[in-house]
Amino acid sequence: MKILGLSPLDKDSTASLVEDGRVLFAAGEERFNRVKQTSGFPVKAIEAALSATGTNPDQIDVVAYPFLAADDEARLIRAAIAADADFAKHFERPDTEAMLDAADARVPYRTQPVHGLISPNERMWKSGMKETFYRAAALHPTIAPDMASREARAWAERAIADHQMWQGELEAGLAKLGLAGKLKRGEHHQSHAANAYLASGFERALVVTLDGYGSGLAGSISLGEGGKLRRLHGIRFPHSLGTFYEMVTSSLGFSPDRHAGKIVGLAAYGDPKVLSDVLLARIDQRHGDVKLLENLNVYFSRHLSTRYPKIDLAAAWQHVLEVVATNLVAHWMKETGASHVVLSGGVTANVKMNQRIHAIPGVQGTFVYPNMGDGGCGSGLAMLLSWKGGVQPSIRDVYWGPSYTNAQIREALDAAGLRYEQPKNLAAEVAKKIHAGEVVGRFDGRMEYGPRALGNRSILYHAKEPGVNQWLNQRLGRTEFMPFAPVTLWEAREQCYVGIRGAEHAAEFMTMTFDCTDWMKQHCPAAVHVDGTARPQLVQRDVNPGYYDVLKEYEKLSGLPSLINTSFNMHEEPIVCSPQDAIRAFLLGHLDALAIGPFFVPNPAAKAEHGHAKQSKRAHAGAAH
Picture 1 (cartoon, rainbow, N blue to C red):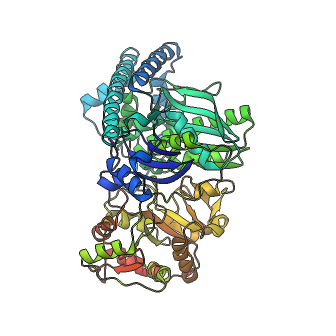
Picture 2: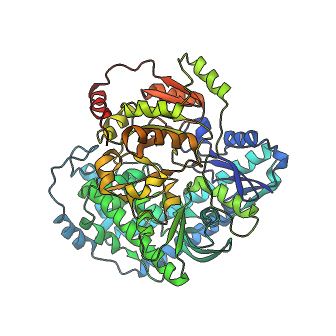
Picture 3: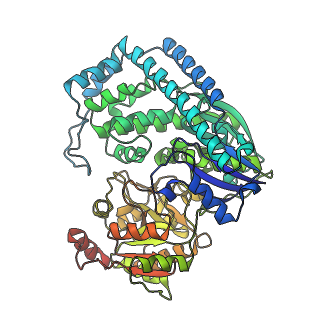
């Protein structure tokens, strides 16, 4: 059975083609139209899926869509908002004013700079009028509940209207392809649970999904056993850890849909003790459930953002997320006796939270679906609807996007007027350049599915130089608080990382942080965050031979089994898809070289010096460990 799985159209619109539970092709629309987190009907991604697999629309048996009909979603949304209002009426409210007065005294004096901030204790600046309004809307005993209720009702009406709009676009798009009669809808969190469990290869596992909103829920707990899923509990919206984290992301001036990762990085610089008790006092976590007071009232986090340092706000939200999530998982592990955990949903993009879950006593194995956000829902529901039964082996990779022939690559290089060569040992050539301090883009094979660059659309550099996080981000037009992530040879995983056993497979998809060993901190400091962790990708040769060989050749030269791997794209652009995209980013990003297919391309504009950055690179290039 061939199923076309479509993700929700509201953001990160994605198409997957699945046959008998096996993903044949999957890619986001953004990779083709070059607009990050594209919404709407994924015409180009569907065309690419059909073309790559040689499928005609009439060969599609079912189109899977991971939301219910708009009227059903509207009913669930209204019921959820009504239940939340009842919860708020009966919640024993803390004395937040007094708790914040105590928190004021806990803010430490700091002098150590934080890259990207004007000062380590930088706060959000707002006019006096706005600060007064935020305080009242967040804390006043009658104004704050009224504002929270208004915000909740406004969210509900927007969401209901959006579901109606996207339903119309979905139906119109399918009609143009002749697929209107093949639509099959599914419950949103069922699609998340399916992709996590069915791709994990675990026979029995606790299945936890956490996101913003989906079919009346903000999360779910299921038991996966023998290839089948059984729902145990649903976390009702708006008691959403996704919304909880979006609020602080927005209040600190970032895009809540794109920049949650910046909060994860920023949190490591702050002190969670400043505000964690304030946040925990607004959360009811009993009986394996989660309920958050006035979770849709953005003015609470906005008030705190003008009153406390950004890093302390980020630290508190991150810490509380970890506490609540680990309590939730630990409760249901005890209830089910499960020893393995699988995760999906946008919240599980939080790699630090995933590390804490894996460290729960009794967890023997953890897997996170590589496209954990809503972009992965279409593949999840399609897998579920076409599953052959039983437990299948885990997915080995997510190189599920388009590939390009050598002739297509050569044509693109010629059109750009670039000089190139075809080395006998491309991996050795790339490793030599990286060891000499050059930044190399790598484009090869099928494009990765999901948010992470996993070697086929990556930028590579050595991990010996901590300063790379500043100058290379600047060159690529990025502002980040996290260091670049490392790619590490599979066989060196325990040399570099602590506590990785049971999560090695998850680490192949860069979905979790781990504490770094002293050896890793000493020899690959560019990949280590200020808190001593890194978010690695482990690579095995039988999964990606060309990528592995680059790393192995580099190890021969340097003695180091890790390199920096960052996504091949410019700031606020999607990861590159085509040879033309790669060439454009290569030139705009001033990379030193490009390995594209079998070809090696030096940058024609590369100069002998690139300012301080080049001098710094050259100082480190000859260092062997």
